[in-house]
Length: 304
Length: 255
Image (cartoon, rainbow over all chains, first blue to last red; front, top):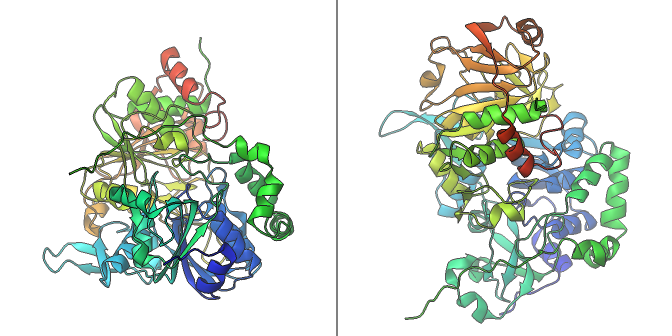
């Protein structure tokens, strides 16, 4: 059964106001920026944003007023440091106040893992002695029932929807991804709904030719969107490199609330849709981000 | 005589902290250059682990801005879930990590969360993998710009625990060993007293006096009985650093 829909339709159906959304699961790569911009265009409000490190994606959503809460380990601009949108929201409530639940990479991963595994929490020794632990009321400590040693208990973190960008998917949502996955597969398993945005929509036989490369099986996926360049400016291995200039420009232009709003108007609202965004970037710029050479993997033989 | 930037010196010093064969949790900026340099010189078997789930036994062959850039993925040994690299950390299989921060204090605690009093604080990006590395790596090295406003008696917020309040604090809170082994700054190299666990000045960089270091440190800084001069990077080390960072993107700006 085909789950293929347009991006606006996927967002309309699966990400209502107030939803808890996990995205940016592969850290600086495969960030579903087109979906982020669609959320902003559809004027989503009061979202809970969940992710370890999502580069400027969370900052854009916060600056656009879409977020009510952020559950993350790191929010900023990887290349340049602080996310000014995030800082303004936390420090001044501009454009609206945002609550923060602070984590480390490991506790975000464990929260998603607990939900993915269907258990109420997972134990760890990370963050013992830190103020992240002391000030996050959802992280608890308890002695291990077997050894008595102090443990941090990370409760299950179950998002309403995961938005993942992958290289290829079939119409049922079975998808392949490569590069560093971060918490992508875990986030998909933890979430009630999964939107897969793919560079290429492929025949089901392609996925079935290499089941070891499957990131998420289709029966966990709610919607598939075919959208080449859907992760720009983040990199997609084998398809395009990171567009560093965008991150520098965003850092400069998000420095004030007025300037950030102007950037969002120019690059998210006035372009109209993803096609308009790509047209504004221009063919030459996109071509300049293409891989200079292929690096095909050694083929694997599933013959029997 | 070769001249070098503070960033290049810090990379060379950081690389010397990596022992051959070690598993090293590597982040961006100077640590990745230190890893590249160490692997090219005295630590050819060191393994690099990245928080996005990438494990490498060779440096990326081109300049990268983030750990998820194409060249850091191509030719990696392993691209797995973050869960797996965190498992390596927690099971004691990561020998060394590198950390930085906005503030550090006398006992090596780092702050990348909130600077200032609660309710009026400046919000920084957060922990990332920093809290995890500080808690779980067998040891870690801190790299920072040395300024009075950053080197404070007690950080406003402990993102990445060092030695807490000193002494056997780590054991008391349940951390499985670990802790900072060195602090490398724009002014000098610091170790930690084995008993009190406070930061101790070990060497000053060329042209830097002990007085200058004290002036930029917000507590009465302990010094080694004999403070030496930090060994400068060799021309060979500089050549390697400049090969991996040809524009000085990391080594010519603020560390």
